[in-house]
Image (tube, rainbow, N blue to C red; front, side):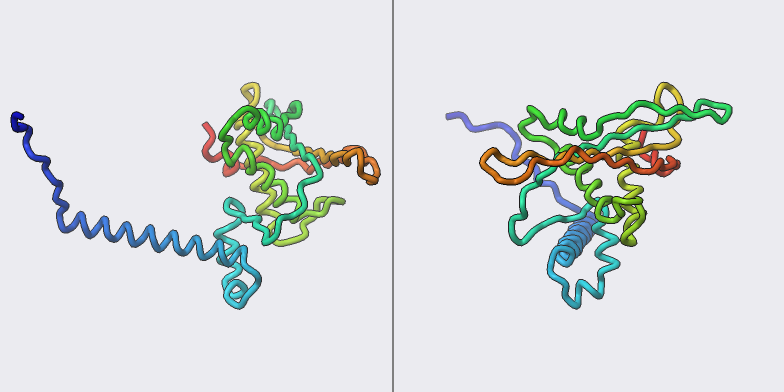
Length: 219
């Protein structure tokens, strides 16, 4: 058997400064990951002196993008279908505006999930959790704030709607957005003695002005 004439593989030698940079980056990433996991643990753990002491810092990191909804025991399954729609107003010039038709944001998510063997987390949970965040911080009677994170919930939900629709419609800039939420209670099984569900409940939110910061990341 003939001996191979290929040259031996060359092992890359990292310089001392490169090893220092790589080591520092590894330490930084490990520390950042540890801090983030620690914050998530404090967020979902029962109240304790440490979580109360650093509640503001933990909430600032977790909300709204990394909100957790873990349960120690399995909760009751959802008994409602919630559909979120949005419509926008555009600036038509000379002080005139135009209100456009409703766009089904939840319907878009369902279309992206149906038939997809590996649907994305955003399609499954982003809009749903954003609505839960808003609903838990506002009164259903008059949309007034019920906790200090209400404004953040409004901005988060508004930004999702605007980024779904875009910065312009029919060539005109979007200046305001409104959301409509329809909650339909699921019918009980035939063998159940529960009463038939009430009619779907429709909740229209106030019009929100669209600011430049709401359009960040849009083409």
